[in-house]
Every structure is written in C-alpha cells, then in structure tokens.
Image (cartoon, rainbow, N blue to C red):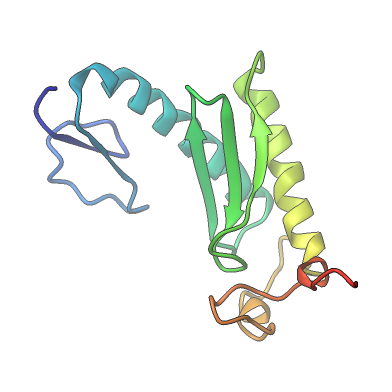
Length: 144
C-alpha cells in the first residue's frame, strides 16, 4: 500500500487546493491514481452537461469505472436515491446524453420543471421525510 494522496478536481496531487465545486478524492494506493483521475474527468464532464441542461439544481455524479456504472442524483431532492447508468461500451457523449435523460426523469418523478428558467426555492417547499428527501409520488408505500 502506498502513501495517502488527495487529488483535487483539477487532477493536482498536492491536495492543498479547495476547488470551486468541492470535489476531492482520496487515494490510499498510488496504483489507483489513473483510474481516479479518469473517474473525476468523466464526472466533471457529465456534471457540466447536467448543469447546462438543468441549472439551479444540485446534481451529483458518481463514477465507478471498475463497477461499470455511474449514478446521477440530485441532492436537493434525495440524499440516497439516484439513477444508475451502465457504462460498458459507451462513449462519453453517449453517457452525457443518458445522464441528461436520467436527470430529467428524476425531475419528472417529483413533478418538477425541466425548464432552464427554474426557481430553486420550489424544491425547498416540497414535502420531505425525516431524512430530508423529497416525498415524491413514487415514494409512497405499496398498497397491501
């Protein structure tokens, strides 16, 4: 096992820079640096695309290259739910397109507008559960 290394979202290895988007990854084994940098690159590209498509929302992109999946979530809606996209045999542009569709689906499931002109206060006024997740129509318990 190598030394602990923190990489900021610009791929610098000094760990001393706090970036504007607050993304940091912590690597315990130096063998994983290239994978971590690639995951960060993919997450940043997809995140930028989501912000362009649906701004004024708090998007989260989790990339797991080894697992072959990326997760799109909106933290202002849910702290623990997201849409999974399989990455196998897909170009970054395809993943970006699928991420935009998944993000739109997340918004639609909570009856939120997909328009660019969006007031983020609308999300704050939605009913929430004890974990601060928005209670959407598909979150209701199944009838017996």
